[in-house]
Length: 341
Image (tube, rainbow, N blue to C red; front, side, top):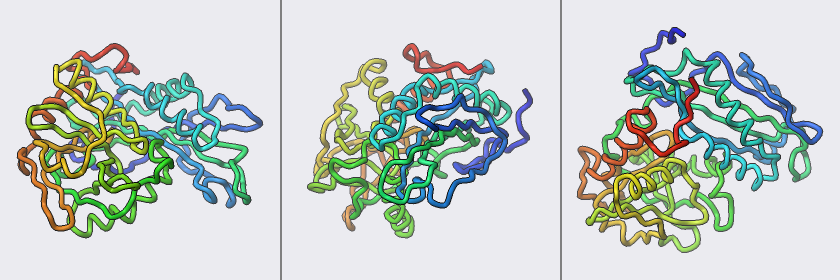
């Protein structure tokens, strides 16, 4: 299929409607079969639960064109698992995992012309999401739900690409102890909007959130997990019950230990030890890895030895390996790449 006439190399991380999206509805205690539609608009009752009580969860994953022309998706089964868990936590009927994967296949194939070509640096971003669609006025779960997947071609999440960024320690909390920080729900991101706008106004790319209970341990940013590298080359990622279990982070930690032979640690990370790390990066579906060159802690600047010019050597090796697997240039573990075509 002929690709759309788009300047693929200059795409930003922004929404552009494609030809098709997938829609399924839950009513009378069951999900229907779902279908592809060309209509990008959603019509809901003014009292729909998603508007009144934010009963909504979502996912994010990418599809790529490989050098030999195949279209693949990276570990969508883990997105299906995570969305299932998110729905259960929000008292929503989970969308079946097998149906999730079938829907991913269908919507990618329907939008094949929108999957960026190999070597462009772009990808097709998929946003599966689910919300309470029936009207609710008293505080309670909805009775009806809608599951959808939209797609959009995207470029890098951070405009600077893999150039190191400067972030700040936030005075705000991203999630509450025993709250919903471990699931991918829109309500968590709504809480971070004021904090990220404030950070941007102050000249920072992102926030570092500390644990809300003691404010002594590193958690994550508004949209990514942290990776640190010690001076002896150990890859460390924070562990907390209120951190979102990132598919990218889990993959990177496996790559580090099982493929590259690096020592890894998933453990609570005290903020006072951050200054002693050699490298720091943010990882997630959107950015993959974005290196952090410095952290501003209320005027005290923590600068990493990896510097502000380029990604540190350990994170660069991890970045090259995971992107190589995603694009099938490097053979990864069995089942990590789902071949759509």
